[in-house]
Image (cartoon, rainbow, N blue to C red; front, top):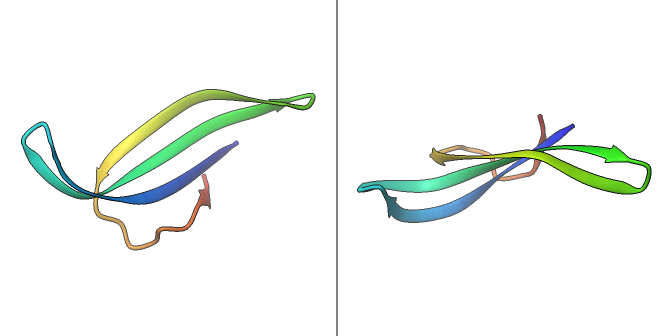
Length: 54
């Protein structure tokens, strides 16, 4: 399973300015424990800021 959320960033990263960053979390649920499999961070500009299933 996965979720994504867009955050305001408005900073430079590696010499380039970015308005927003998008964080995507891929996870699984084993019994009653949520296990994070991987996390991705993208920099750019997106329209929606709500958490989306991916």
